[in-house]
Image (tube, rainbow, N blue to C red; front, side):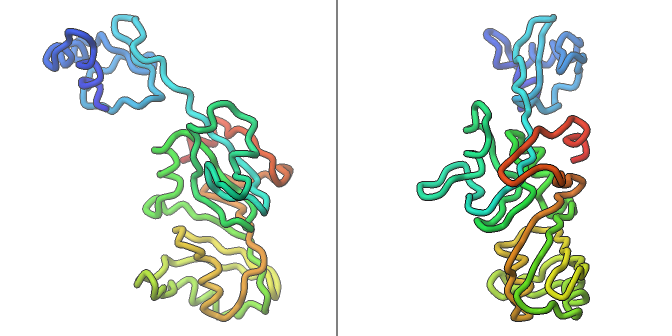
Length: 230
């Protein structure tokens, strides 16, 4: 919501009065005077008028979880445990998942209550790579490196995937970096070469890297420095 409209919601305050209050410097956002009534106010912002708090500001929460197999990336599920069940935190209904993982896929999962921040992390136009460790049933054809870099055509969606970087780590193992998140994308890309993915583990999302010492099913808070990277 725009700041001037936020102020105009006060009792007996017209839109004109709200604009004048903001322009006069009497309104502070997060402790700083703001004179631009068009700036956006979010639920996480503290807003005060003449020193009186109008909105205390909700606390933004960010968690890094090492997702194990056997749980779903959902806020609720009638049959299976969810990743939110692994969090010992209050008000879990306010949280959502930034970049889901399949039921048997492991690794880095980000959970937050900040929708704008999570969209910056996951939307393709941000060009933040997501890196996966992949194991396959058959040896990986080195031709995959070139073909993945060119993009693969997905007939079902009638689209070509964005260029992806593939690094071979062994005959059956590779590290793959994507810049989008299509449905079962990794499995379908290797499926173009009739090779089945047997294990998939996400190591990184943009600048956020899963800690080596964070065990499956465990989580930690992201630092302010980490959240500021997105």
